[in-house]
Image 1 (spheres, rainbow, N blue to C red):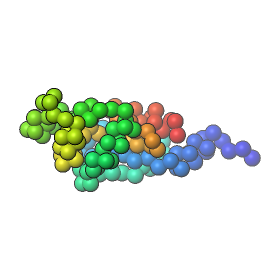
Image 2 (image 1 turned 120 degrees about the horizontal axis):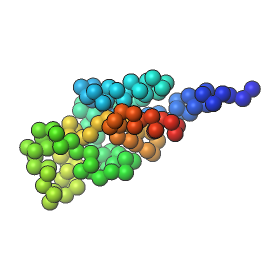
Image 3 (image 1 turned 90 degrees about the vertical axis):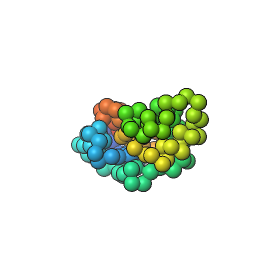
Image 4 (image 1 turned 30 degrees about the vertical axis):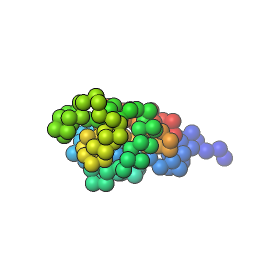
Length: 133
């Protein structure tokens, strides 16, 4: 008996483990996680403020996102101004170091599925990612 499309989709979602870089104090993070769960996806939750990504992980994440380092910096955080991160002469390597030591500067939430990642601002962006898997 052939499997229904819904069952195949659910099985595929369970085979590909999703990860969410999550901040429980962030309403966009909470909304994205809720959307995932409503769609039957239980991602691995990475509390990136507690366990910040290292430089290699950040570089891989940016590659998956298809974004540059400056595109995932939160300009609204006090550290952005305090550290002078609006200085265009700062190299990407320096920005990576700052982001590793000040993870609150990273845009969130980010959801990773296989080789793809998406910045979920707005949270509904995640639906395109899980719709493919």
